[in-house]
Length: 189
Image (cartoon, rainbow, N blue to C red):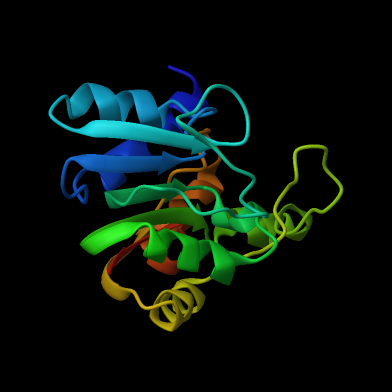
C-alpha cells in the first residue's frame, strides 16, 4: 500500500465515525482515496462531491464561493482549508449549507506539526502550480474560526496522517501529541 493510501486510510478512520445523517457533501473529493473508502463503508448514505476539477456533483471554485441549492447533514472538508484565500468565508459557506444540527468535519495540516518545524517553507507556499498552502492553522486557531462562524465544536483531535516513512523523528509526535501532523475538528450547526 502506498504512503498516500495509508495516510488516506488514517484520515478515513478519523472522519468516518463522525458522519451524521444520510446527505453527505465531500468537498475536494476528486483527488483523494478517502471518498471511495467513505462510500464503500456507508452504503446507506448518499454522498455528493464538490470540486473544481473532474466530474463532481457540484463544481465550485472555493475561493469564489456560490450558493448551492441544497443543504446537507454532514460536510467533509479534508485538507482544503490550508489552500484557501479566505478560510472564514469557506466556513460560513459550510455553515449555510448544513441542516440544523448538521456537522462539519474538517482536517488540515497542523502548523506546529513536526513536518512544518522541519521544513517551514512547506507551511505556506504561494509558488506552486496547484495553489499550495496559503494558510497554516493550530488547533486554537481552528476553534476560534469555528466559534466565529457559528459552529459548536464537538471534538478536536491531533492525528498523525502525514509521515508514513521510516524516519525515527516520526516517533516524536507519538509522544508529544501537539506535534502530530494533522488536525481534525468537528463542529455542529
